[in-house]
Length: 285
Image 1 (cartoon, rainbow, N blue to C red):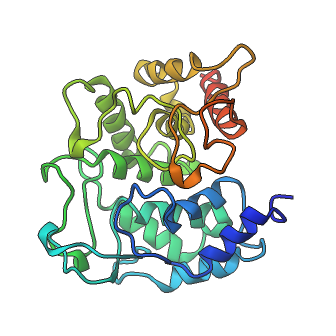
Image 2: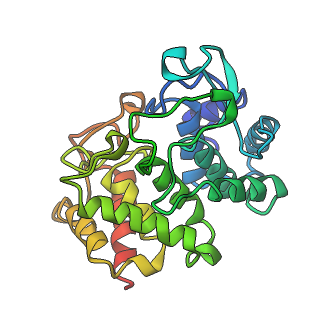
């Protein structure tokens, strides 16, 4: 029924021209990058109609370093060339790789190599704002020594798909980085990623740096469940349920306003599923 739905069929057809529109902002919720992740999140696989072609298109745009690329344009004033070019950034390459893994491509040499190259970029405080050589001196609005909270989060999202990696140092460093930011949320906002009022609003799909996205990822790594800092975030989510355990969007992406989670008046099935999944995992500690 999912594959037969007109909206899903149209989205698959749209993504068949990957990489699609030029990426100018990673917060552009309607970009191919986030639609790709959504198709992977709802359970589509490489053997479903149209998905194999998308995977093939992605693999054709691969950097010499091994990361999968998107089509981007960074203005000279921000350290780029001002030209359309294939490149990768640590705020998009993990998302593309994660989608391939969820589609069932996780054991292929290309995906395994991309994963390893991304992990190698980690520092002792998390993953930084890192980009491919083609983008020159481009860097987000933060100190060069800071971790990028979003890059760190989406790297954990990727690594969470591999249970055998959950106890590796890279995962432990990344988890501690995110939880430390929560603990110090009043003092630290690296690269302008805050964990305040907007962060705590329920929103779907899970494409940015917010409480539902963070708890959904961290609760997939079982040893995090006993951490008080994570439990504080989970409790905030828990308190947003209605009398029968349903959850309603508190903020929406306008590019997704026609979806059932794209309104704030009625409980959302998708947000309820996501939140209840977080709560269920949290009870396993």
